Each structure stands twice: as structure tokens, then as C-alpha cells.
Length: 209
Image (cartoon, rainbow, N blue to C red; front, side, top):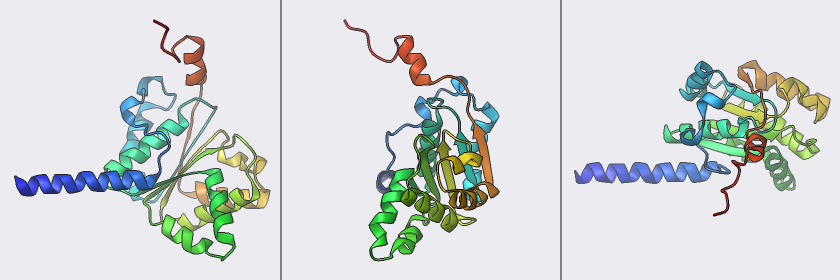
């Protein structure tokens, strides 16, 4: 019993460490995900939750209008991966720009990327809301190139990847999308924003007592 408790404690500590290192923004999981309200087909949701695509080093792109659950679904997949013993790293697109700027002075970006792609799953969130800075475009390309056929990359975006040349230089966009989509599962969300729907129906706040 003591050995079992020690092992369980070690597992809990490892889980906490992996979750902290991942850098998830909100802590959303499938526990608060409403499967029936999502426009993602249920069989597709179930298949992605198995994480078999991560084991095959395939990519995942979820794109669609704002408020249709893209970031929530991507983070919940990341949380599921962490709970399954995998390592995950979370970025926004501008985090990658900051990474490039931070390592440009001593030309250490290659070493930084080699550490990042030790993760089993790398998630890049919130592409397409704003034009991508040159540094962020470079960082995104470098990350996708370094991970190509070696690690899984998951991307959430307001734009379909084929439209990334609208927000970043065409040459970089073409090279990035070519590598990203070669082994990728593409899911397109539809419908109205969950946030706006809740706001207009009075469900976004608790009523005054």
C-alpha cells in the first residue's frame, strides 16, 4: 500500500509538472466542453481525443469564426495529452515572435527550437485575428519546419491555413503551410459565437440578487 501510494504521488507530481510546463492559458478541459453544441462532428471529436494522430506525428488545424470553440478544443486536447503522459507546449503566434527576438542577438534560435520540439505536441493558438509580425511569421515557419515529420503541431486560426498569405509574407506562408498541411487533419468550425450568444441571452453573467 505504501509503495502504491508513493507511485500515485509521483504520478500526480509528474502530471502537475507537465501541466505547468505546457503553459496552458485557461485550464479548459473536455470536462467543461459541450460536445453537442460544437459544429465539429462527434466522430471527429472522438477520433481526435484518442491522440492517435499525435503518436503518428500528424498535425491538426482547427479554423473558423471567432467564438466557435477553437481554442477551447485545442487546449482540451493538450490537457488530454498531458494526462496521457505526453509533453505539450502552448504558444500564441506572437509568443513565437518574442522567441525569435529573444534569441536573435546570440543566434541561438536553433537551440531554442530544438528544446521546444522535444514536446510531443506543440500548440499554436489564435492565428488570423491580426496581421502577423515579421518576427512571428519567421518563428512560426521555423517551428513548423523543425517539427515537420518529427512532432505534432496543432493550430487554431480564424483563417483556413490556405489563407495565411493574407496575414504573413507570401513566401513564408507558402513554405509554412506546405509543411503544416502535408500530414494534417483539418477541422472547420461553423456557427455563431458562443460568447456572443450567451451575452445576448443573459447567460454571460450571474443575475443580481
